[in-house]
Amino acid sequence: MSLQRRLLIYLLVCAPLVWFVGLYFSISRARHEVNELFDTELIRLARQIQSTLGTNYPRTPAPLPPAPGEGSREAGASDVRDLAVAVWDTQGRLMISDREGAELPHRADASGFVDQEINGRAWRVYYLQSFDGRWLVAAGQGAYERDELVYSLTLSQVVPWVLLLPILLGVMAWAVRRALSPMHQLTAELAGRKAEDLRPVPGDRAPAELKPLLGAMNGLFARIEQLLVRERRFTADAAHEMRTPLAVLRAQWDVVRRSGSTAERAEAEAKLGVGLDRMGRLVTQMLSLSRVESGVQPSLATEVEWPQIVEQAMSDCLALAERRRIELACDWPPRGIHPLPLLGDEHLLTVMLRNLLDNAVRYAPTGTTVLLRFSGEHLEIENEGSPLSPEQLMRLGERFYRPDGQHEGGSGLGISIVRRIAELHGLELILGTGPNGQGVKMTLQFEAACR
Image (spheres, rainbow, N blue to C red):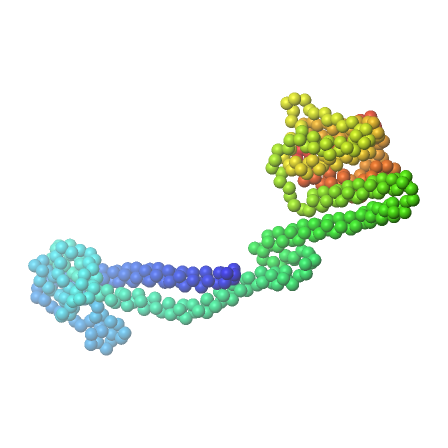
């Protein structure tokens, strides 16, 4: 069910319900006011009659003159058929009555208002005792007269509202549709957009309730656009970088096919194998980079066990280290100090450490040592190669960038992968020169915001 239909149903059901509740309280309040008004008139009438009684008043029953409305042309629109008065003496004899056949019942012990039934009709009677006990005055009124006044007053107010209720409901339905029109416009705009159109949705004229939604949508569009930009850049870089190795492999394969002697063929096959290794390394690095830049947030809820990660990363780099006669060493902190306490993804951290060790081993002089050193707040990797210039250190980490004069094959993606994985874990990579001004030192430490 749509939000508009749900809101209309709520309004069309709740509005009449609230209207009837208000009508009930209006009738109750009107009845209270009418009863208060007529009760006051009955008290005043009884006191006026009592004030006219004296010691020389006739002791025989005497009817009162006809009240207006009973044969008098001067009564106008008045109706006093539901009013009655009576006076009794101490012996209970009826001394005064305003009409025959509508006598109020004598109740010697009564005082104040009494609701009772007279001749099958409900009456409200006010009994007033004189101070000397000689007279009992009663003034009564039929309850129908009061109800008739209440209903006539209420009806005069209800009829216009009943006639206006359909118009009110129609206006509310129009107002709901009008209020929800910005949502329909937003839906139409988004439905008409193309897949590549990630422009922010303007929210200057949007209602205040829609602005948080528009802000979240625009943030999502921005993240999607950044992801698409990264993918396009990665695809373009990968296509550009793979074109050269493929051309080299094709040329080396042609050399293998055209080689005339066994020695030439063996040399050509060795070069072809090196080219294939470089291509395999490039594909592996590109897959790793694609994974860490895919936008999927890894699970960072596992406490990192660095010994296992170091063992795996060194094992992966051991073949290259043996070929180049590089010694791998690891320096752990003193007992009682946890090496770089961290919560993270151990697989990604293994990839990160393997890339750092691979770079250090690949570009270290033959027969030297690559040292991995842990402390409580950072880890360092040092080799003993030639120092890099500040310009080279600044560019180190750009995709597919490799300093000039390198004899070992590489793709130029390792440092980019390391930086991205470090960023996901709240770490930063700092590249610098070794302690003796030789080699390269790579330091991983917590970012300032996470330190």
